[in-house]
Structures are given as structure tokens and as C-alpha cells.
Length: 170
Image (cartoon, helix red, strand yellow):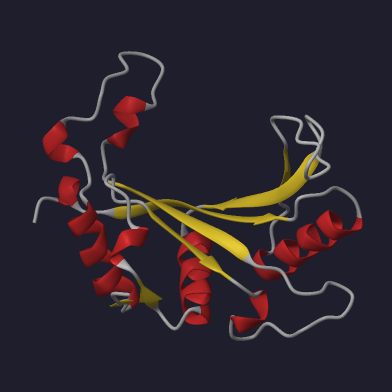
């Protein structure tokens, strides 16, 4: 197979949305630091929503971007929490994968800590092929050709081969 056509993981993004600033957000940040040994960043609200008590530019969530070997380990760990069951609808047309975990204690090795509590999290995995840099570089930036883009089927095959994922239909 052509090495330029091999699908690889670009990054994995893990986020926890708590909806409010303060103690709850700091506990979510502590949880992500403990799980992935990396400092997360806070994300801020874009609009004011008085129904939820959210003001514009108020910190309401935290996220973490993992790349390389850390991303592979994190994906493997998080997939164990959902028994490696993924729905085909969780892949988008560009071949990216997004799924959620209701409680972080479902992940093997994670124990309940009363100081932190229980949080759910969203995981987004972005895939790419070698050569995707042409869309990101500053000089002579170009679009990725249609025949070089990743399809949903290619990503599903990659996940099945490398992470032994089961596809469920519900």
C-alpha cells in the first residue's frame, strides 16, 4: 500500500463541560490532569444565556488535546470504558470520530474520589493522512485533493484493525 494513503491519528481531544465556573470546573480540571498527565485549558462561553446563568466569556468547560503516543494510549483507555462499542453514526463524513462517556469511573483503573465527584466527558478523534500539511502551511497553502481525503469507511477500518472496535447498530 502507498504510505501516503495510510490513515493515522492526528489528535484526540477530551473535554468536560460543567456549565459553570468555580469549584466544579476546578475539580474537572484536576480529573483531566490525573487521567492524562497533562494540563487542560479552560474554554469560555461565547454568548450570554440568562436561563442557564451563563455570561459571555465565563469559563464553563475544560479540554485537553493529545497527540502522538499519548493520544493512542488515551483512546485505548477511553474505549475500554465503553467496551469498545461504537456506532457507525459516531463517524462524520470527513472520517473523524466523536463519542461520549457518561461517567469517568467506567474507565478501567479509575476509582471514585469523593473530592472530585463523577464527570462525563466527550472524546473527539481527528484522523489524517501524510500530506495534510499542505492545507495548514503558510506558504503555498492548498486544499487537500478529493482522492486524498479520508472517508468514513477508511477510518472505520483503521479503528477496527488497530483498536479492535465493535460496531453496534441501535
